[in-house]
Image (cartoon, rainbow, N blue to C red):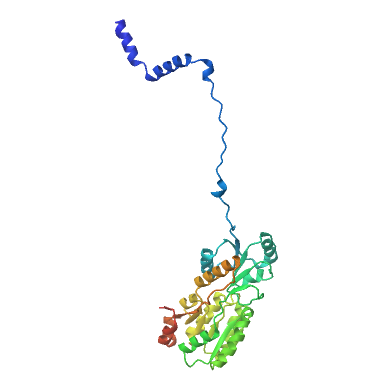
Length: 326
């Protein structure tokens, strides 16, 4: 019985216990001096890491992008610019009441370049002379040294679109504010060479523009809205649409979105093209190259429903238009 009990106990003894006992026996047989750890061998890394990890030769330049928020055309331009420029872009929504603070902050930041989108943004930083400036959708340029993406529509293209839509047109009312005065001066000379008359409908406020259009109705047979964003508010565009539908005065809008919303015509530049060209100019300037980019081509958009309602020559407009809204 004792013999069987001893065998049972032996079978139930866990292997870990056996291993521990064996280790104790082996350690006891080793002299004390041999159990001390060996001293570490000194080692120096002689590899040349400088040939493998190098800092960038040219640090990424900082580009400040200034804009007035909430304008569809600006947002599309900015989208293309950010994707094409060689630099770190920081976007700032401008506040006209804090122009001096903004200029002080910019001088402390010392960006490699400023891209101003729109007249309001450009007006705030136009006094800056020691930082390169690229601007787009600016019609009153104060500093010749600044680089412009020209978005002024040639007056001849606009007036020819009017005559294509309605060959008998003679007097066109031009709705504009102070910021677009230079465009009107050029347009008058072109109009006279085409046998047309421009009626200057200048105003300082949206309500003033509406009143000016109402008084001018007997003297005009077409309306041309210029891209003065401080003047061209939604109520001004809506009133011009009313005159088009009720009095059959063909309306030339500022952007293709105006044609989409009912204006007979709109002649503008693709905002994506504007953003791409601004990115090219900015990258060239920051690289120390001479800035040069091919000129943009304006695109005519036509509202087909408005053309039929006005009895306009839709086929002649189709030949000129890039896009026709149904």
